[in-house]
Image 1 (tube, rainbow, N blue to C red):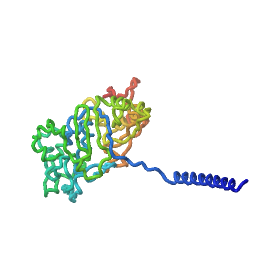
Image 2: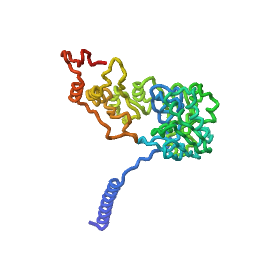
Image 3: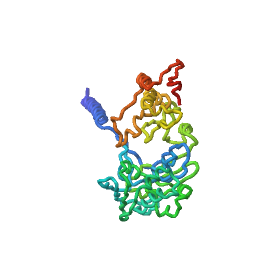
Image 4: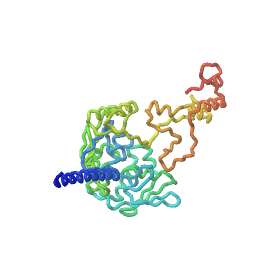
Length: 383
């Protein structure tokens, strides 16, 4: 073989070995480093809602799901809730509570502007609470009753003091209610709060502002005065449909990008959708049965043993699994587990038919005539 041939062979061998080394290094790099997905700014997210807004107003939104969803993005309260249900600062920088639990002093942020550019201050707090306290307030009576027992004082443009008639542990929860701009709403009589055009052209301090409202949709865009990190999205649109069942159909047709609620009947179909990612989280609410202990038709409700037996005899987990497609949590207290006031040691009533039967026997309710219905003194256990 000529020297030239040997030289070419060595060149090929060196190139081949270099290629192997390069592949090895690339493989090592891929193994040693992970890819981080960084959100890109821009784009519009379209979500479907069942129903339609009636009043995008934090003082009136409690009974309408669409209104509540919009108000959370548009308005803020003095405080808010974090992901664990703890009260955290929002429009207030901080607060102080007197040792007797009667006085709450809030120090407001000085860098907040409403969506129209007007500055936020104590007058906005005074107006909002004053509207809640007004006898003509058209919203929830329970909400008004709480605030009517509270004295509100403006100490300076950025300091507000609340004085309670008696200590009330959940009071900070009530300070999460969204505030309204006094420079716009003070011109509207409180009796006409629900009828004002401002409910369709809301001005808040939240991260998004309303830019378009129609019968079909509401469009939100980032608040140009937002003091926090600018939202990645260029816009959020909420499109309205007649009921929850229509939302999944709209998603399958490509009319929306997501939906906030899926009915139990639609869970199986939703799980089969290759383009839909399902997330489950507990809601801040519960469904319960209240027994009227003063009912003349069911005097046995006054017997604790009967009430306990009814609860032991109810397979609540099975109800959740079969009726709600597993989307529920058995409640052991009227206080939600995610909140600070929940006691994890509260007594629990698991499904226990033997215990239920024993309690009813002890209370004197037995099936004396074999008809399958317990009775006592000739009266059946029914309600």
